Each structure stands twice: as C-alpha cells, then as structure tokens.
Image (cartoon, rainbow over all chains, first blue to last red):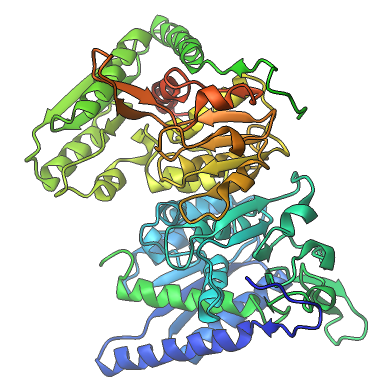
Length: 303
Length: 303
C-alpha cells in the first residue's frame, strides 16, 4: 500500500449508502420471489423489557423489514418473563414454518441466560449469527449465517475494492459480537479474507506500535476516540465499529454517537475510513436482512 | 521476557512426560470412579479403510484407553462403506448410553463428506472437539470439548508455567485442526490465554519479521524445518506442531518424523522449545482421553 502524507485526501467509506444499496438489492430479490408466487421472507424479533437502546434497534429492524418487503413480527415481553417462558417462545418460532429467521434482542434480564436462549434457536433461523453452530461453521470456512456486524465490515471492504489478501489487519477488541469473529473472517482462506490478522485487547502490550504496523485497523472496543493519529500508519484503512453515546446538551437527544477513532486526527492519515455514525452501524441491519433472505432461500442449511 | 545469547541453555518442553503425567491423573480418577461403583469411561473409534497413519493413530488411541482404565471399542469399515451407512453407525453411537465419546478417524474416503459426518456426532460425544458446536462455544469462551491438539499446546504452556497473558503469540498456519483454534484459545480472556495473537499463513508477507516479534511461536504448517534461526527472537518460546514423515533409509520404519522447526538452529536461541517427536504429538492423545473423561462426567454438557 502506498504511503500518503497528511495532505492526501481520504476515501470516506459510506456505510449508510452501502447499506441502502444492499437493501435495494434485497428488495429487488423479494419482488422477484413474490412475483413468482412465493411468500416474502419473514423475520421475527423478541424484545424483553423496555431498554431504550433495544427499543430503538428493534424498531429499526422492523422498519427495515417493511422497506425491503419482508414480513415481520415483533413479540414483546415484560422484564419478568421466566427463562422457561422465553425458551417456549423460541421453540414456537423454531417450529413455525412461516418464520424464516428470528432474533432475541440482547441484553436480557439477569435471570435469563443469553447463552441458553441463543443455543435454543435453531441454527437455520439464527439470523443474528450468534449460535455456536454458525460461529463454528464460520471458523471452519463452511456455509454459515455470519454474525451481522463482522460480516458487514467484510462486505464494506469488498464493495469498496479494498484488498485484504496478504494485508495485515489489526483488530482492537475481542468481543464475541465483533472483535473475535471479524478477526476470524479476515483470516479465512477466502477472497474476502486472507489477511494476516493480529487480535489485540486489554492485555496487549504497546498497542500503538502494533497498530502502526497495520494495513487495516478495525477498532471495536467501545472507548470513544481511543485510536489516535500516532497509532495509524499513513495510508492505512480504518474501520471504526464504536458507537458510544456521549452526553451532548446541544443535541435534542441529549447525546452524540462517538466512534472508537479520533476521526479528525486519523482521517487525514488514512487511505480510507468509516465515519460514525454512517459507517459500520447501518451495515448491521443490512446484513441481518441478508441473513434472513439467505435463511428463507435455504442457502446455508438446505431445506 | 529476558533476552538470551546463543550459549544460554533452553528448557526442553517434554510433551511425552507431560502426557504420561496427565494419563496417570486420569487413571487415578478412573480408579476412584470404579471404586465408587461407576462404570469406567468408554471411548469408541470408527476407522474406515486401511490408511497406514490412521491405523497407527487409532491403535495408539485404543491402547491409551486401556492404559488409563477406559473401556474402548474399535469399529472398522472397508473403504466402500456408504455415507448413509457411516451416518447410521454414528447415530447408533450417539444413542448408545454405554459410549461416552467417540471419534471418526480422518481422512475419510472421497465419497464421504467429513463435515456431514462430524456434524452428525452429538456435540456431547464429540471428544475430538471438531463439531462446529464445540468450536463455536470455544470461540465464545463457553464450556466446550476442545480440539485435542490446540488444547494440548495450551496445557503444555500452563504446566511449564509459561506466562501467556500480554505475550505476543505468532501462530504459523491456519488449519481448522490446529492453527486457527490455537490462535483462538491463546487470545481468549482466560488465565491460559490473554495473548496478543497474530495468525499467519501462506499469504502472509514478511513472515520472518513478524515471527521475530513473537514471545511465543507456534508452528503448525507441516513443512519440515521451516522455522529457522533468523525467524526467532532470542528468549522466545517455540512450539512445534509439525510431524512430517521424511524418508530415512537408516531407520527401520524407513522414515524420520520432522517438525516445522529447525531444532538444531532454533533451540539455542529459545527459552523453551518442544522437540519432535515427544513434544506436542503425545499431548493429542492425552487430551482426547481428558475429553472422554469430561464427557463421561457430563462436565461440559450436563447429563
């Protein structure tokens, strides 16, 4: 990758637009399916309680379903639902032939084990890609419903023509939802992978020096503006997965979304970079819809 | 980690002895179980065809079972067994309450899908730790039957008191059996993990330079003596997973086992190193036995 000086203009990786493109592609495919007499794909979401963030996420998912022509079902429960009742609801959705995929919005109340609930979902309907069966297949390079945010990152890199093969990707953060799975995806022996991948985390020594060796930096730690200019090699590609709400009295909502990257400092160095908001965030829902379409078509687990 | 000059003596990581120690611990536990009136753990192995290597591996596994007091069953089939027949045998073992765990020795003949066979094994009895369910749980840090060779590597590091937390581990090779899972285990947020991990492979650029930054090198590529002195920082810990048969007329067997590390060159630089043979190799069977014991006790998937 060519080096660049601070005056070089960077490419903005527009996740919002890319997500719109993907949704348009999905809508076109749904139109074909229904024109051929098939029912549209159907996504169900289970929401427990009234967490503000969860309410917003689930509402956006349901709206996105409508926009691409999917059917959708929202199942709401109060915080006091028992684990057994929730597991029974999961089982009902597992067995409902009218539901192609479903999600259980996290977090769940403390008396319910999220692992138990996720493992109760049939892998064929696990459109969040969180079931160990899908994660395990992903690791083996087998067909899988991929976790949405990591898959969205890989999709962004591909659609922007960013070469991954032989590049050194440094992933900061080892969460089960983003850091660990994206490190696996980027290292796989596939056209969209083939990176040399270094996975960094809270125990990593001299993180800035490691980051400076990266061709591609993926920041997924949830610490606002953690990645600063001294951590990024000129010409690197920077993917910012962070979306932390920081209090901001000037906003109607009372907060601003901050990424893990100090955009103002880092963008002038980068060859390409995702903004926050409008970068990785919108890709998550697009990939959830894509998983639902793939589940409906039996692409991963033949019906 | 302190640097060392070429005259410093290295520690030999004796996998043969460690495997013996583990087997003695297992045998003691089996004696306790049977003294308490329980039946001993029972491992079954399915062997298809007459591959020389596979015959040896399976024979050694059965012998190891006998030595620790396990029951064992060897089921042999000819190369022309159909996939459906093999899957029926797997299902029979799944449902046999007298079998705690079983393995299907790989490779299988080309007309049988190894993925299909592995996925047909109940995760609770998958003592090779190859089922996507176990791999996925491993990725999430949940209880799992771990793949034997990667688990053996982690066990060796632990038993030799080699610190992993905050150390930089460079894994060479991304196979599903060793490289990829050991990279995951070493990065996990556990006492036995917490490494910063770089996963390298055939597409990696300037591998020697990356290796030289490692505190721990794990070589798992199957290329004899690939890792040379110029690739290892003085004081590094070197784990050699390679076991390639190289023709050797002076041996009765006609071959010598060669590791992925040029031992003569690298050992004087290393603070600790595994030999080949007698390093990682013997640990694989010990960990298979440990998985069988854990399966029998219902430690991972409560019965």
